[in-house]
Structures are given as C-alpha cells and as structure tokens.
Image (cartoon, rainbow, N blue to C red):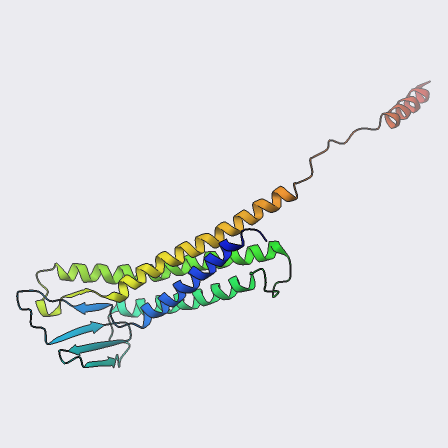
Length: 224
C-alpha cells in the first residue's frame, strides 16, 4: 500500500489528539481566577473545570471538590460535559477503525480498497471529534472574555482562560491535521487504483453487414 508514512502520521496525530481530548476533559483549569489590581500578594488561586473546582492556597496546598449536583450546574458546563464525552468516544472509535485499516493488520482482510476506506472513515471521525472539542472550548472562552470585560461583574467573580482551553485548541488542531492526512491518504489510494486499473473504453457495437445483407435479400425475394 503506497503512502504508508502518511497513514502512520495521521494515526499518530489522531492518537495524540485523543489523549489531548481526554486531558482537556479531566483538567480543572478551564476557568482560573483573575488577578486584577495592584495587589500582588495572592493567597489562593481558584480553578474551575467540568467535573470539579480546586483551590490552591499560598502554602501550595491544593484542595479539589467534585460537583455534587448535576442539575445545579450552568448550561454551558452541562453542554461541555456532553460534547467532550462524545468527542472522547468518537476519537476512540476513529482510532480503532484506523488501526483496522493499517497495512500490517489483517482484521479487514488484504483488500487495499477496504483498508483505504477504513482509514478515510477514521479521518472523517477525527475531524468530527475536533469540532466536538472546539465548540465547548470556544463557547467557554467567549463567556469568560465577556464576563471579564463586563463592568457589572464583581472583580472577585472574574475569570481568565485556563490551561485546559489552550490544550483543547491544540488538540483540535492536531485532530484536524491527523484526520486530513488520513482522508488525503484515502483519496490518493483511490486515484492510484484508478490509474492502475483504468476503466475499459466504451466500444460502439458494430453491425453485422452479412446479417443485414441476408435480411435484405429475403425481403426482396418475398416481393418478387
């Protein structure tokens, strides 16, 4: 199968994108406390994630607490939870399908066309996973920025962009690139098969002149 390094690179990037998606989902640094003003003495730092919130004190003591009620969460957190869980499931399915389409794996037989379609499907799923990660990350970042510049929000409630959001953007880019490489591999493989086995040219059926001549003779003798 040609373009073998292309599928290796695509699957490797898809794997790293899946790991980044899992880390983005679990990390609590989606929203971090903002330090505004001239007071540089910081006694505690607040982290807010999808599953827990943490408080890190000046003595380097970290205390985390899981959210006890799901219904009491803001709609953005509930939606982000659902989308990130779907993204993790999609990335895992995409990785399994991509591994089945590898050259050395015989799960799908030895048909190169089937393996190319499996890798193309894996690439599409990785790209779809990137969209599922991008939506909650951008939505959360938009809310944080709007509240930060809103004068009606108290200073103690203002938040900044956390490290998990930047990791989510990086994971999205990796997923897009990996999925694009796998889709490109599928297209290149199909084009190579078309060049190797071109379609047979269309032949215009030729009429049998002898048959037509005998038919004409029969018709002429019948009139006589």
